[in-house]
Length: 426
View 1 (cartoon, rainbow, N blue to C red):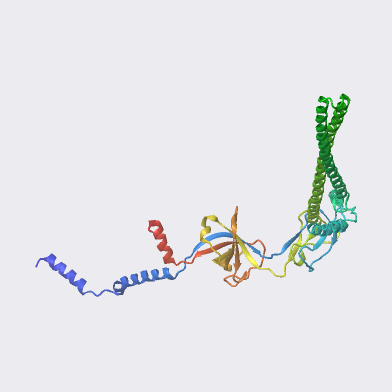
View 2: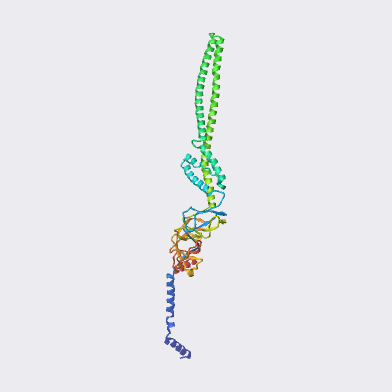
């Protein structure tokens, strides 16, 4: 046997007879097990599809700021810290040239006046404004315009000057119509007389031709006919003048009706304009509560203390409120987002790695888009308590990143769909 063949036989014999160690014996099985384990984990590991948006902490009835809207001193402090106020209650008055009591009284009268106007109670409306206000400051000019319109309105009501004048005009028109009827009757009689006179004249002409009557009789008959004929143009002229006078009276009555209606309608516009001016005045010189709750000043507030415009005096804290996050959904992926979907909130001021995340869901999505997108309200499952059991203190305006879970998928599904997407496989 050749040496090389004997050498190969010895090597082959060594390979056949040598027992493999543990690594060589189980390596492939371990590798396959790891592959299967990783593959299995991709099924159990959640990897949802999310849409990210910026969110801001708010509430359905969040604390509202107490602000000054004009430079000035506090004239009267009506409520202090701890007082409960109802929405619309005044908290303080700012000094101005106007008397607050008179302005507020006029405002109440205007509110009642609007109700009377809506119910067509003209006399009740007029009676409201018997008292004359003289210390309205900046509002005095608008008030004087209102008084002028009120006077015209008073004279336009059923017991006023203008309706009485209209009634006189209507009586004149009725008289003219009766005179016109009599003129028509007289005109018809004159035409009948003229026709009879013409017949008599023709008959007399025949008798004169037969030498039965004298020429003098014929002339007298002719003169009588001409007299009857002359009455008709006079009556026609009277009828024409009567008709023109009726038209003038009717036009005057229509103009009077138009003026009365305009004055009655104008008072509503004047009232609403004056009320708008008072509302603007109140926004400046009366600090009011925009919600019901308890007053909490954050700076010392005293009578005669001066404040600049937009000075923050404190807050009104509502008794009950619901904490939510507001976010604007981008239109690029809006079709994936639906009400009820889960949301994870990661606050910028409280890193989620240390404090955890806040869980919630989309409660409502606006149907109308703005320049920022569609407004969505995110309700919280456990309030401001995070997944790490840490309670975030409420601060209006805290920002967060909202991860909206549009589809709760597994890692394996994500890998599969990504593979299909990259290879354009339907």
